[in-house]
Image 1 (cartoon, rainbow, N blue to C red):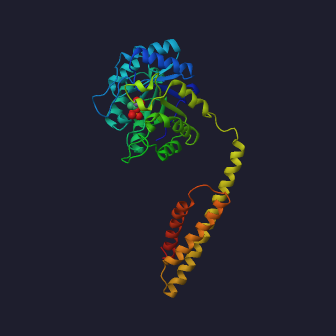
Image 2 (cartoon, rainbow, N blue to C red):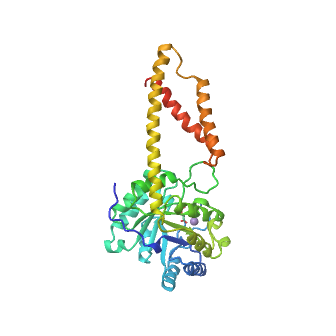
Image 3 (spheres, helix red, strand yellow):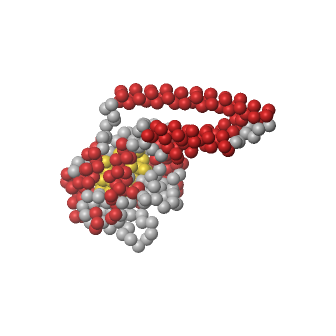
Length: 360
Ligand code: PEP
Ligand code: MN
């Protein structure tokens, strides 16, 4: 499915920051003001908090919108919050929320996403066109579940639509709270370049010391368009996600270090890209030649009654490749783990070569 007529966010909507939860009037207004003083124009705050385990702070509830509206009036900021069902969406719309997002747990559930979509469809186009809907990735790394949720909200008529990569639970222990999966982001960017992609480095890392690097990489390496960052006027006192929230001035540091506009050296990049394309062509042609030779050897081995797979010869081939890579490393031409690389690539080439010699 193609998403047509998506409205691109304005530059000042590309950084969303604010506390995990709206906790009190003073906490929210203080955080919002400091963020605004640091150049942030969209302030987030969770009103209803979907905790994984019950019993913790589960959100201040609708009263929090009064404080969000105050921030909007005083600082001229836009406000963003999470909604998780029909009722919450209705209350958020009534309170003039500019951006709503569907959280990772809700995106996982097509019933709830459809309920939200049906609620959207009951509103006028004019009303819905004022609101941006962001869809966080589902908890598990399931591309279609994410795409399905986006499609449901799009089909309800939303054109201010975007995505948030907040990492996935993969069942494996990693250094992050939710592992980033850039392959899924890349696939989404490739198949749906029209959908703006935000990254939430706070819920990915779960750790304030790693937020800067993750935010930087998301934009500069993986080509995300925007950021949603958790920030609190007093991070250690936060009632939810205290470990990952940063001070408002730290959000500014991150934003200032990122080069937001596309590369100024575009021409030089294009020349180098052309070189890469030429090298790729050479590589493919050389592999084709290599496989042709394999076929000839296969025929000869068969007519001699020789075995196709000869471990000693294989050892020699892979060691030769490793030696060449080692020489390149000595000359400082490469700087990564070449043994690992050669093992993977040459084993694959060897597997195909054996199949070809077997005449498959
Ligand atoms: C949040 O943004 O505070 C939140 C609960 O996020 P997620 O849905 O990514 O867990
Ligand atoms: Mn949070």
